[in-house]
Image (cartoon, rainbow, N blue to C red; front, side):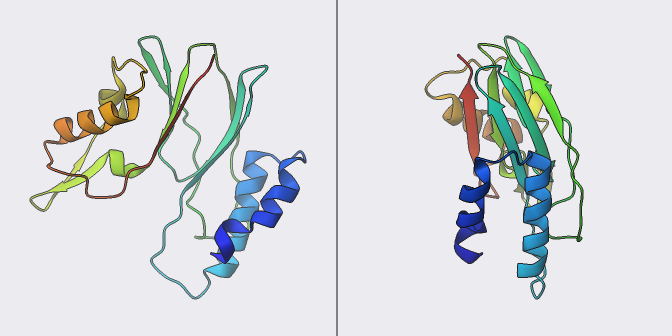
Length: 169
């Protein structure tokens, strides 16, 4: 994909006031052009800007799983979502913001954490069941993976899994 999403554009525009929704719209248009002869490819993407001073997260979502915010014992999903990248031209993505607090854990993950196939049967997990009561620690990601496998009763993951988490200080 052209050296992974045109890094020169990303570098040039990161310092400008481009919003997550505007970035996803641009990315969608570029991928529509690049993928015009390709079928069956699904690209999902979450874009966010975290202001670390104010702890405010502005975000947009193109078909990616809803990230979770863990605040103490509570779990909140970031609900905004839009269509995956490359399905239609000129898509305007919704954007939303959330005020975070010190101690919050923001966790982004791919659908491989939730979706399994065991003995030919599809299994879909509720993310709240995976994250519930799980303290943030140095082995947080490994614990999420283990819990997902236990809940699904699967031997291994059917799809690739990516997890990104950050704890606000």
